[in-house]
Length: 172
Image (cartoon, rainbow, N blue to C red; front, side, top):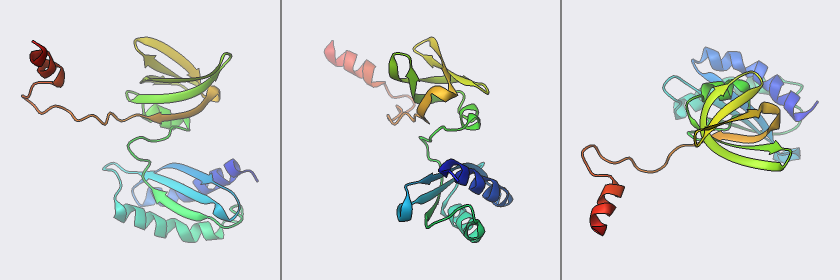
């Protein structure tokens, strides 16, 4: 059984438990190989997830995972939030991220390409990114890596001048 098939087996098994706890299963990844495998289960919630949610989810799914014959071999279970800059791997991830900034790496006939733009649409087959006012259509099959992008710059305080206005005054 492939790594992807094992991850899908885990997804199907743990999704009802995560749902019963009031959270949503965001993603399941099985990373590494041999004794160094990590089973990463990411959950979300209407108000985010905290350490108590992570602990409750871990305690609920761990005994179930021990019974899955398809998850052969040792692994480290890691339950977490997908984070503010989260990976986009499934069509539902992209649909949930419409309206957000996204960075994507994908294959083209000319080689790999990286773009960053506003995700404006996510259909069953492709995404559409607005890159500097130009729509970029990218098929899911061509995407090698994509994630949401969070703007880490501090926002100006209400009523305070912006940096660009302050610099312009300093130059005058």
